[in-house]
Length: 112
Image (cartoon, rainbow, N blue to C red):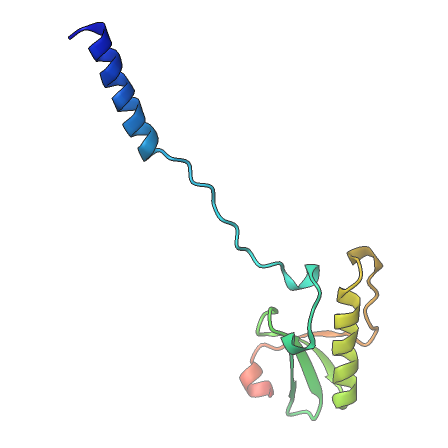
C-alpha cells in the first residue's frame, strides 16, 4: 500500500468518524417560569373551601400551594388582578398586594 493509499484510507476513516460524532446542539424549549413572565387571568383558578372561604392557585404552582383565604369573589379577582398587573413590571419594581397569604394544603380533596 502506497502512502497516497494510506492517506486516502485515513481520510475515509476520519470522515466516517466525523459523521458518527456529529455534534447535536440541544434545542431549548424550556418554558419561562410564571414568576419571570407576564401572567394572564386565565392561568389562575379558585375554589370555595369547606370553611366558606375562597382560595386561589396559579396553574404552575404545586397542587398543594394556594393563596387565601378570601371572603368573596371580589377579593379573589382583586388578588388575581394584582398578580397580573405586577407581572408586567420589572422584577425589582413589583409590589404585590398585601392580602397575599400562601397556604399549604396537604389534602386538597378533603379541604375543598
